[in-house]
Image (cartoon, rainbow, N blue to C red; front, side, top):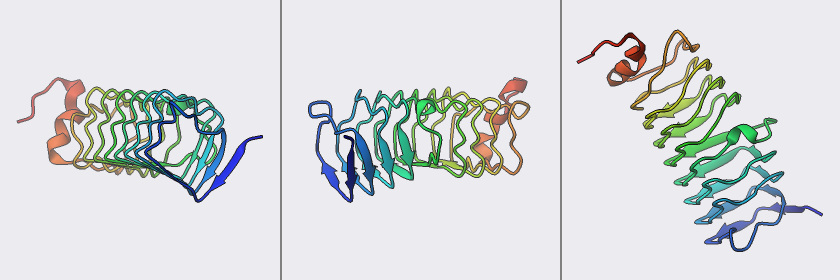
Length: 189
């Protein structure tokens, strides 16, 4: 029988050594925990907060993240595109999400601040109304995405082709202008 855990705090635990019991976790806080390479398939996390955890390379097939917040976490190579999409709601603050995949997800109004998003795949995502501020998007793939009303101000190293994305009312810093003009092979000083 799957666990049903509510209002619990987990601190300084390696779930690689002692796997988290499969089930539903609601309003739980995970601090300084190591989930790296753990199988979290079919887990459900509702209103959970992850603080300075290592979630790199977790397996996310049918994992449910509903109102999940990640703060200061290392999250390399996560396949968010394999998560359950029903009520999928995420926020990231000061996280390293390099090489993670959000392919074809609808993650409207997502908050992503002060994060490393190197080589992240946002292909065909609906990010409308999101905030992606003060992030490093070096080598990120952003194609055929809905970026309407997305606030990219303060973010750097992005390459976004305005002819391949919906961008109405999205916001950018002036120093990010070269990332919007890269396809034209022009120099902006």
